[in-house]
Image 1: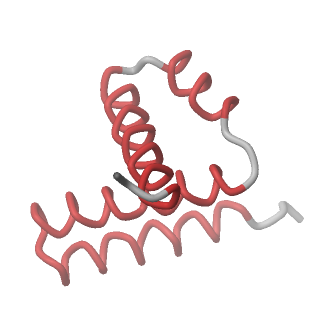
Image 2 (image 1 turned 180 degrees about the vertical axis):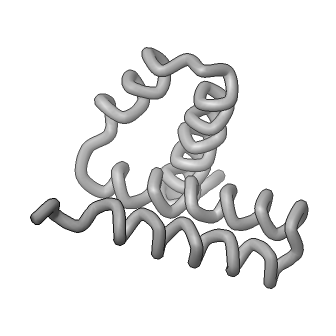
Length: 86
């Protein structure tokens, strides 16, 4: 028998994997549905699972250093784009 925490983690992984798959398929309606159903701790679990899957995939295909460089570049670029316009 699995604990409540284990079941919650499994559900978060399932949602994160489905979200990534829907993104790859361009199914924005399905992505939106997943996001709308998340509440409270489910949101944090989902984001954690999404980050874990992303890091695993990126590290596998780019190597750990390449993945770290890529995510740093995305964060820096996004930060500059998010700055308010003067």
